[in-house]
Length: 551
Image 1 (cartoon, rainbow, N blue to C red):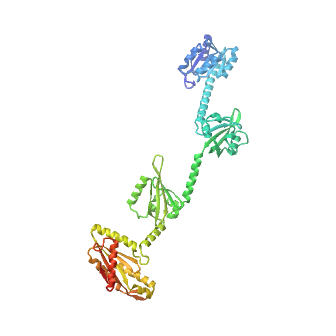
Image 2: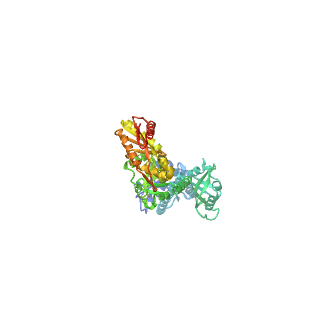
Image 3: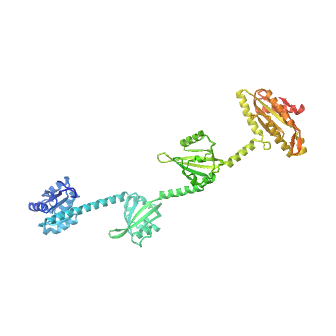
């Protein structure tokens, strides 16, 4: 049976016997069969040429060779067989007078040598067994060293071996880290050329220059050979090299990590200190983070909302269609900006200006939703107050001149589309100036407030009662079924204002003169209708006041 390279785990040990002397060859065969607990399968080669011809066949567990062959002699034979059978241990058979050559052969890579003439089979068996064992150990060591060397060569980390005087080894990553094109540019360099400050102290201490290092890893700033600085993590360990102390140094370029850490700290600081409320949800729409501003705006503590759906903030003011449109825009554009009414923890409704954005991973999948919002309730209320002051009379609360023109314009456009009718009543109070002169402006103002309420009581919800200023008012009557409708309203107004006004203990009586203009009879736009109604009002005053006149 054939044997393995190790000779272990199989019944037979494959032996290549290189011997030109038939007597010596028979003796070796005989000794191999005596007192052996395992069989030997011997292949005989009488010349080096015959031996080398076996190199392409099955592997041998051991090679036994004479050094005096017809076609080769001495160490030349050894070198040739070692090259041809690198995985098989080589044992030299030498004559007594040639013992020195046997020792030289061992120094060149043979596992052992035997002096011919021995008759002890156990000596031969033991020599072969030890040769195979030592060869297996040496092979495993070589393979281990080769693997280790390969790992060092392909390592993404810079690895250097340094004495206290020079760099002894550097891998390709070290060349890249320090910015050199050739390994020779690092070898022989003084450690001080590559390291400085605490990093140099660490390397020199590990290399035996000083006492034991206080630590074996530090983070520091190093310089590449072109002068560029980079952030580094330096680790140094004490080792032996050529029986002298040295430092195995690993350098990791952590520039990107440091940048990421600084960016993270900055982002965290912004998140924690920004005045705007921030909320982050996961892909499952559950809250994973909120900032202090969120707590101030909503009244919820972080522990009360983490893991929950943002629906807990909903005010109920928005329809499902609103949220559907919001999510559609968010998923399409990646962000949404607008105003949302929400509810605080105490139940108070408030309005917020919000921006929602998506965060996707490298594959484009949504991993987070980020919401940034601010409470604009006061701002909104102030805007409404400004709009109200711009559109309504501060004293009576009636629409002012600007809002009157806007509503009249809209009513005219509707009447034009629907071929309908519209009435405009222009009112001027009779006897208002004497009230101011006799009782003062405070009573006059009270009179205008009560008068405004009486005017509202004379018209429909869809009609407009406006104050132009002073004691002039306008009533707009859209959607009139008949021209007579304007006269009916004018009659109601005249009668309502004839009733005395009780103001601060005094009774005041006034009246009003009204001019009426109709669309489309007296004009097609605001200016024409208001002008026609104004002129009709003057005609009513001239006719005796407390009455109305049609344009």
